[in-house]
Image (tube, rainbow, N blue to C red; front, top):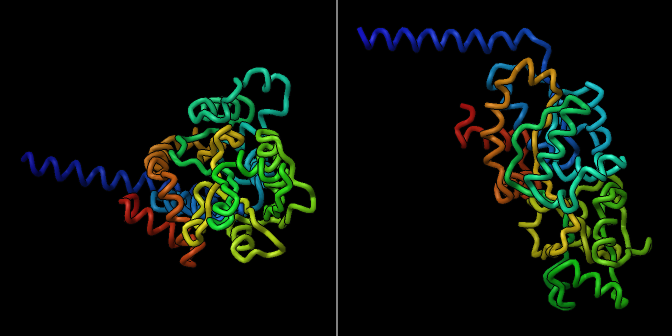
Amino acid sequence: MKRLTIFALLAAMLVGGLAFAQQYKNDAPIRVGSKQFTEQIVLGKVIVEALRANGYQVTDKTNLGGTAVVRKALTNGEIDVYPNYTGTAISNWYRDTKWAQDSIPAGASGNAYQSYSIVSSLDAALNDLVWLEPAPANNTYALAVTAAFAKEHNLATVADLAKYINDGGQVKLATGDEFAQRPDGVASFEKTYGFKFKESQMLVIAGATPAQTEQALNNGSNGVNIAMAYGTDGALKAYNFVVLKDPNGAQPVFQPTPVFRGAVIRKYPEIAGILNPIWAKFTTEELQNLNAKVEVDGQNPDQVAKDFLTQNGFIK
């Protein structure tokens, strides 16, 4: 009798679970966006595949645009979720107003806990946006040079690079236009370490990803000897590059986090229980490996996302 009761309960749970999943198939699809670089696309695809596997209808709007485009799409209700970064939010949206500047403690952007607490609280109060739990990875902006260049000029940190530039050293930085313009990009390195890239010392590539800037560095195109990079960049594994350390904290902590419209999470609060355990797996090394599968091995981001979720037991 006990066995029959257990089997009956399991059967009821299975039927109930199928019915629960079935209800999502009749709802409006959840629109998943992302920015245009590799990691964003992979993380967006992870959200797409995880939600679909749990019975939700999903519209894939990954690879949507740059930071401003995707953020606006979320706040305007054109998408329902995208993977954002804590450092991006605290540096680009919550440093603009006097009250925000006064309320954000000095150094908060470099502290993972404070940064997440501030941006998640402000976005919830001001924009009805819900930040789920952040990944432990830190996809910070970085400056990379070849190992040979670093050895020749004794470069290990951005401070070393600043001294080299201020002493008249010849440099040419390959960068995307967003990194060149953002306050937490090139300008933050220059301000923190007291140097300045001249216009002639920058090769600004419209819409460039680190894969493109690092390719320019690898080829030495147009005299490039420094490249914009990301802390979790997979292409770094393919090149013998040195990522210059940032001891003075020019860059905020950039923890990737799924950010939803509040209406979606209130309707489907169980989504947090689906995505939070997945995001906990995204260490810096794990994201480097996933990015490398796309950038180095040439795999499709959809397949990379599916394989990751399958291998870690999140989907079958």
